Amino acid sequence: MTANCVKNFDRLHSSARRLAMVSIFVFIGFAVSSAQNTYFAPNNLVVSRSVYDNNPNNVTVGELLPPNCQATQGGCNGNAVNDGTYPYVWNNNLVDGSFGITSKLFLDQYTPAGALINSLEVPNSGPPQKDHMVTSFSSKSEVALNLSTDGQYLTFMGYVSAIDNLDVSNSNTPGVLDPTNPVGESYYRAVALVDAKGKFKFTETNAYSGNNGRAAILNNTNGANFLYTAGNAGNGGNPQPNGIIVAAGAQILTPQTKAEIAQRPGTPTPVASFNITQLGDSHDKIGKDDNFRGLRIFNNVVYYTKGSGGNGVNTVYFVDPSLTVCNDSNGVGLPAANAILPTTPLAYDPTVLQTKGLDPNNMCVLKGFPTTLKSTTSFPFGVWFANANTLYVSDEGNGTNTFSNGIYTAAASQPTAGLQKWIFDSVTGQWNLAYVLQSGLQLGVPYTVAGYPTGNNPATGLPWSPGADGLRNITGVVNGDGTATIYGITSTVSGNGDQGADPNQLVAITDNLSATTLPTGESFSSLLTAGFAEVLRGVSFTPGSSGGH
Image (cartoon, rainbow, N blue to C red):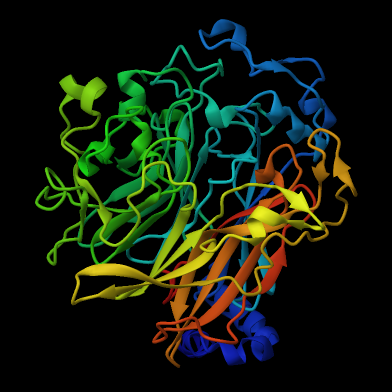
């Protein structure tokens, strides 16, 4: 019976039949769960959702921000202008650039058509000896979901903290302290691993001090047992301390089986690094070139994206652990045909951290992708390979919230925001942008959120109502009819004091894989919108699925 159910799941990848099969799919999902004593059934979707505890007492008007700033060399940014009431609380971001409040995480299981099956709450409270993890509301680059290399586990990142703590996403980690960071508190970052039964394991780390871990993938095939992670570090002055440089970007961890209270995280262990001097540019803020967000493994190659910050190159990168392609090159290349996944930390030279960063550099810009320094038009976030010659890249947009005549004008006019389709040209040996899928995203068009204030936010003079600005995390599946269906989480613009706090959407589109020019008739559909005091962050297929890798 179970085998027949799994076959039925596979047949449901035909997008034309999805809507008609929703009720059958939900029934099958529960049947498989019951038969196998699992929580997640194969070939469903999982969406990570952050829920803010809408408590006015979370912030007191007039309190100094960030917390314990008086004890730091960074000093205080200002006084809170709003209490903890949603969404007004995020106007505090206008006086404290580190502002955020830790919140609960949920993993929601949906059918591919968007019908909710169940929700799993990530442990987030209880006595100190109980394993727990939270995210930061409204850090928009967090909680990407990824399947392990064997497809049996989901991984994502957060903080070892209770809910309702301030500015945790810019705090130091206990083992990597930056005295110039104005946030005067410290918390471990952590990787969560969850299986099909909904059972969690957590691995603490001192990486990403001063900033946030954003994505993780477990490599557990061919005898391997490693976590690759993506994120950013540093929230203080320049030059950054050595520990901050080492704690940034691309890290490698060994998954832990001990309870969090028994773990003793050591020094961060970077697995890869890029420096703009590889492209012939002059050094900038050491460590900020490795401000990574997206993470994907395909054909034994680890890929990263950078799409934010005032330093470096916003583009798609890959890791070259053999140092045969990227080191001492022009910083642009293609993975080796016999590529292998990294199994050890990067053997960097500690004597040149302040002048060269993590040297030698073992990352390249994927050939064909942008190499412009400090781009104002390229904001890549998620990547998903349909096959070796077809790569989909999400672009979250520039975040500019100019508003006129009922529309967010900058968001509506972006030519590359949304879902980019890149095709590999074997003759020229590089990737080329084929087209950008935007239809149906309604870029820049305000939409209504139940319970949200109407009119303009007095703090910004712009509408509370959000509009889509692009896409962040994505996943996809190749269908049997020569198409691929890609699911994505939208980014937003609005008059909110922190646009990452806007309730956003899960959308989907089906694209003709063989198309090299923009097809007519392809359009995104909205599968769900986050509710009041909620945001959507990551999307993946469930453990045991055939798609999403």
